[in-house]
Length: 189
Image (cartoon, rainbow, N blue to C red; front, side, top):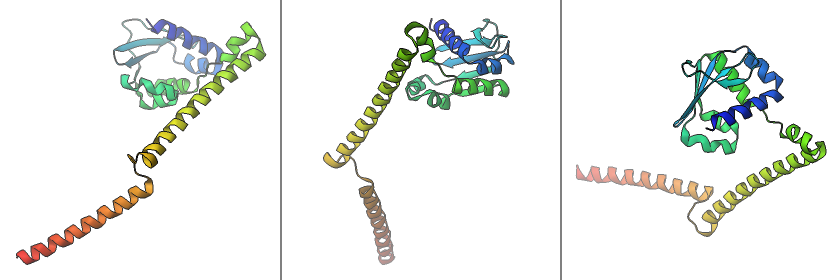
């Protein structure tokens, strides 16, 4: 259901990146399977360096497994998601797929330009990028403010210096306890 649009989008991005298609061409006819949770689908590399749905009977040369509970990491970027992916199979094909997936970039500006002009397309993409950066900064600020509140106002968290002090006091208490145990054992004997 979502495989066809995702494959179509991936091939669209590949049309913008000649280098990626050139790397994939040498693996024409080879199949890769992507598995995440209950979703599993296979793609085959075409002679032109694009992807097409694999035959149902095709055995994959490479399998990419992503834990279903890790898909949220896509919001932190493709590298975060790929870092938890397990890639198995032919090393050269797996390496090429990994490289292409890490470096393939969608040129949204080039797609918008024919519809609204170069200048407006540039401004739209710049605005979207600024909005995304602002959201990330907002999240960072919120996290920092929450940590400050929990540490300084509500006292639910300890500061680093307080944690070090507590650690030192615990070590001192353990030493004193060991010394006391030795004295008790000496008197008991």
